[in-house]
Image (cartoon, rainbow, N blue to C red; front, side, top):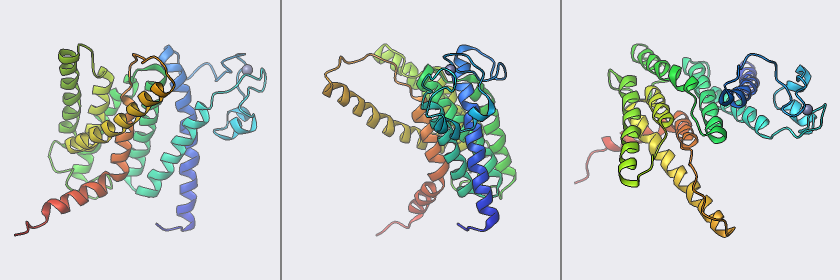
Length: 282
Ligand SMILES: [Zn+2]
């Protein structure tokens, strides 16, 4: 990693851009589930409905300066807003630090923003927005084709991008695996395992990362999901709460799996391929 002035400058720009995109994601997260337009009206305080001026709408900073309260009515502003902005800003910075001045940076910034969006909509509304997955699947396939023809692309992961129909195959594998799991769960457990939104989400990630990426993401998502699931059951038991029968959103785990693939997939597959290529000891 080098710290030339230009590089540092763009690292800062990436962070600021991320926080601004995060601010826009907040609008989508609160309005999409209600079927509202994300363009108009201007942002308002949910309590007193006073339009929020630009000074009070600066990502991260305004929330701090306002002390998490509306300037007009004093209603508490949820910490979810600065959290989304901070997470998006951090991801944009990480993408730039990892991929630098390459084609991958633009694509993966967009992908991380999409995954933040999916995570928070699924956590708050228990749905995965088609507004993300419908354009995301063809976009992923397009990027895969781009990588296929432009061999120098920073998106290429050795040992993963090897099929001619990389993106198509990934999207199909991602969708098919969860679709079948869902049907099996319906048959055996008499309840749906995944929502159809999860199917489309993994298809989208497959379009970007191929069928090997799909397996990797599913593994990471399942591990994190089990740990979080067990922990929450344990906490409920300790607190003596009734076992809650509730829907467990899988979208956030798939999204985290996608981000792990994005940042660590390259080294992991490199290591895996090296290991597989080792001569057998006799
Ligand atoms: Zn207010």
